Length: 134
Ligand code: CO
Image 1 (cartoon, rainbow, N blue to C red):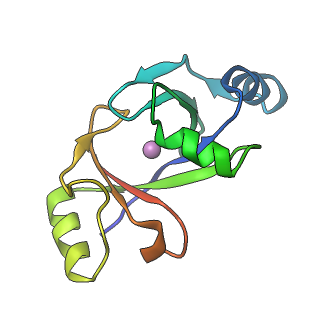
Image 2: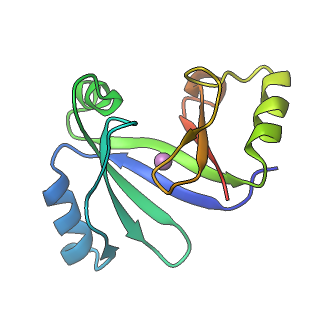
């Protein structure tokens, strides 16, 4: 059911420093910051030949990324995103396996303008999983 790895998201305590490091030290193709108020994050995408890296920084009050950074002050891998063809079919199948969908269970429009859901990390070996319909 899942397809390509769409991105790995890393929560960072200093967005500009992280972007500079990926640009200068790692020589990556680093995009411009984008505010995503619906998700409480500012995002920078880094295009790699086979996937993307998403740098996440808190935006606004009650950002889920702020809570993550409070627990992980140096930053850390926040989630991984797999591509699916049909997010409703994927969700309905996952629910039958006992997996929990975060939020109200309905897809939200994600940072790439496509529908996404998040799956409870306790159901996936401690990893927060995002599914994106492509
Ligand atoms: Co993501």
